[in-house]
Image 1 (cartoon, one colour):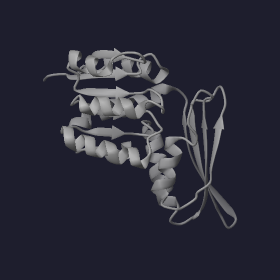
Image 2 (cartoon, rainbow, N blue to C red; image 1 turned 30 degrees about the horizontal axis):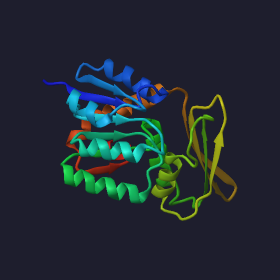
Image 3 (cartoon, one colour; image 1 turned 135 degrees about the vertical axis):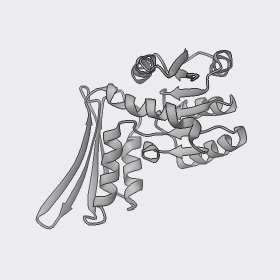
Image 4 (tube, rainbow, N blue to C red; image 1 turned 90 degrees about the vertical axis):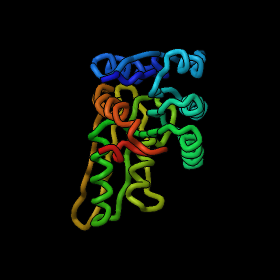
Amino acid sequence: MAKIKVLVNGAKGKMGAETVKAILKEPDLELVGQTDLGDDLAAQIKASQAEVVVDFTRPDIVMKNAKTILNSKAHAVIGTTGISEANLKELEKLCEKNGVNCLVAPNFAIGAVLMMRFAKEAIKYMPNVEIIELHHDKKLDKPSGTAIKTAALMGKKDIPIHSVRLPGLVAHQEVLFGGVGQTLSIRHDSISRESFMPGVIMAVRKIKKLKGLVYGLTNLL
């Protein structure tokens, strides 16, 4: 069986470096390229014949990268946050135009996806809810993509989201429900960036079988 050719964009960053290590461990995946800021992404995709490009870069350049990947006729696995609803619609059109697929995932940790799923169920019975998301102090965007996705899944307008940015944290989120004489807390903690890798690898393996734009890892479970 032919290996899936993968290029990692943002390979010098913490998430990118972790992704490189994870791909190298998988016998069915072939790391064909590592790019970062200043590299010609389109040229590298063409030269390496990458089938799938994983992007872990920055919110301010993620759309430029996503467009380059899709217009290069490669499938995209986007873990960078900062993509708006309007951006998603644009990516959907690019997928259709180029005959490729794109997964945009606010969080690749399986536990985080389950947390969102459980929160969606809980709000049916406990509608009073707030979200507290905590990340490392280098995270550029707030609130986090995971918190925004969680609120959207719960389908209630104006859910308060509290953002904490402190050194020592990685990625954490608590969905706190309040009721008469009781509270319910659904919390997920990523202790290290390794927690995201099973989800990234699953996305790389499944991206070819998806159809167009897919938002959220939950659609792959």
